[in-house]
Length: 365
Image 1 (tube, one colour):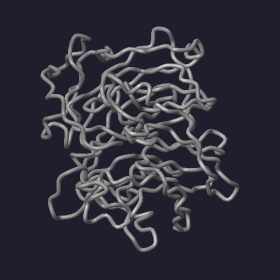
Image 2 (cartoon, rainbow, N blue to C red):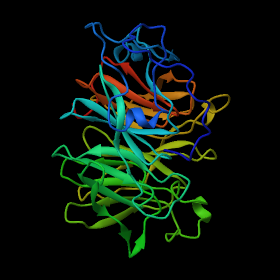
Image 3 (cartoon, helix red, strand yellow):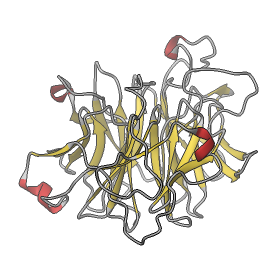
């Protein structure tokens, strides 16, 4: 969930009608006319499953990783051609994954056997004045009723989707702190009691911390309660980014996407939902050389392991802070999230949507 990356190139391979062989490229996104109203992948006349190309590698640093990722686990490339893919979340009702393309102000949907299509536009900026930068939605999550909740860069708020379609409608859940607009909410996570925790870095502002429209003098971590009350929890992090709760909800993890201090912080959650002082849970500085990315989006599995995007791809870190291994995507990797039956990890890596099968379920499944 960091600032916009340079696009590495336009996909050069297209899926032919009905083509399902592994030698073909992953589904490509640049042709808007084919993805706005219909699925991009034409139905095959056979019932044979689509075979997707694999890429990257899995770096194994500890035998404990074998209990989380099978020795033959492969990273599959499902779709490509995006500008900066973000925030994958599983929609149980549609049995599909939703994910943001932040610069394009769009949420896409991808479904097995159908491919992907444009699902929600605008996703994060509903204003009439054209603007550049990163206007779209970033992190996505579902509330207890299965409704989509978005961190909206351009509108500078956290909102719930009320109505989709050509003219989407959103209900703001948090817009201000002390009568000042947020910077650009970035990622978010629900607690079981309905409290919503979210980060607010300046990545959606043109000029970041120097943007003239920035009203808050800090980049914070907040909680919004079901009654709408907003509480500032952390204000001393340079660039708060991904956010996740441990399965017992006693620890809140926050990724810091600052190359000068590329760490994951851990905060003890107090009985009233506020946070105690934080500690550095994991420092990625030693992994930065020669690898793309900084700490960004993160999720936890049912055993409390942290799956954190960072240098190289997705880092798998034990609850004790031990680096077990990395899913190397070779790209700056923004976020991840489980789907299907809870044992498929979907990954947004710059221009790609990818997935890998896991032996452990994601928390919440």
